Image: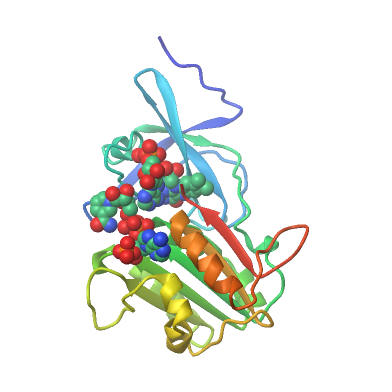
Length: 253
Ligand SMILES: Cc1cc2nc3c(=O)[nH]c(=O)nc-3n(C[C@H](O)[C@H](O)[C@H](O)COP(=O)(O)OP(=O)(O)OC[C@H]3O[C@@H](n4cnc5c(N)ncnc54)[C@H](O)[C@@H]3O)c2cc1C
Ligand SMILES: NC(=O)c1ccc[n+]([C@@H]2O[C@H](COP(=O)([O-])OP(=O)(O)OC[C@H]3O[C@@H](n4cnc5c(N)ncnc54)[C@H](OP(=O)(O)O)[C@@H]3O)[C@@H](O)[C@H]2O)c1
């Protein structure tokens, strides 16, 4: 029996490309008719599997003004959706929720001098979307993007990051963190430990402090929690609509 899909909520998109970064990391690029979104937000992608629409949330990697929609994902062992998405070919249908959601957006962030964007794994995606818009560069004197991965080959989007470095050489810094491999260029530890022992700030040449910093954190929920705790110990507070603070988070699971 065909599955009934609410076409007011779901757009039938078409795959443009499934780009393989590594054996487990992919970008999927899609043409779909979606509603305008704000950089940093996520939508849902879905496929009909065994007669049911199976959908999951994914952050937009493309900026709102960019035509092709892009999402960055890791194949999770036994994951129902990700293992199907990697098998898609150009032209295949994929469901995209028209309306985006989420509050990991700059309009939720109070004014500050410095913006820190801390991510693990695939959660670099929403930060790239934000950095591809003009707003962060107009609002913050300095922006530090931190990408923590297990192995160096998981540091995707080198070209995008290089372009940002070329466009904003004084304003932008990228700090790679590779936890399970020694490299000549990356910090080797977990983000909370790098905050606790001061190595992250030393590398950035900037202090994290409540009077100057806004921090956005996205990815592994255990990292989000431990990092928030490390920042609270420095006097930074969770940013909420009713009580503005310094730390804005999104958990991926
Ligand atoms: C707000 C939000 C935004 C998200 N955006 C993205 C995104 O842009 N890219 C993306 O890959 N995933 C993202 N996710 C996770 C995504 O929705 C799926 O859970 C994931 O792709 C796995 O789907 P699955 O059906 O294959 O397996 P599931 O059955 O959904 O697998 C669940 C398990 O896989 C692990 N897992 C799930 N997602 C990840 C991940 N990204 N990295 C490492 N381990 C993970 C966790 O242990 C989780 O319990 C997001 C989740 C939320 C809540
Ligand atoms: N990455 C791979 O090689 C690989 C391969 C196949 C499948 N997968 C699947 O993909 C999923 C996760 O992959 P991932 O590597 O993108 O995400 P991840 O496990 O969240 O790791 C990304 C980074 O976050 C760090 N991290 C993990 N837990 C943390 C915590 N509590 N506090 C602070 N930092 C923490 C990791 O450090 P540590 O290294 O110290 O944990 C690593 O640097 C899993 O489901 C896995 O089974 C991954």
